[in-house]
Amino acid sequence: MEPTSLILSVVSVINMGILGILVCIFGNMYRKTKAQLPLGMIVVAGMLFLHNVIGAIGYFSHEMIFSYNIFPYMLGVGIAELAGLIIFLKLTLD
Image (cartoon, rainbow, N blue to C red):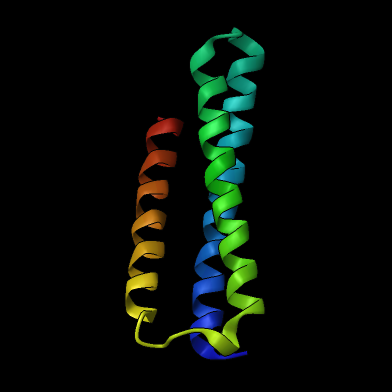
C-alpha cells in the first residue's frame, strides 16, 4: 500500500472510531430521554460514518488511480473533519 493511501485510510478509521463513540452516546441519550435531538444526531453521525467507510474503502481499492497531486487537499479535509469531531466529542461529553 502506498503511504498516502495508508495515511488517508488511518485518518478515516480514526474518524469512524470517534463517530462510533458519538453514536453510542447519542443512543444512550435517546434511550433515556426519547428526545428528538439525539435521534437526529445519530442520523448525522451515521451518515458521516458511512462517508468515512466509503472513503477508506476507496483509498484501499483505488490507490492505483489515485492522483498524488490531490493528496494534500484530501488529507486537509480528513484532518479538518477529525478536528471537528474531536471538538464535537469533547462538547458532547461535557
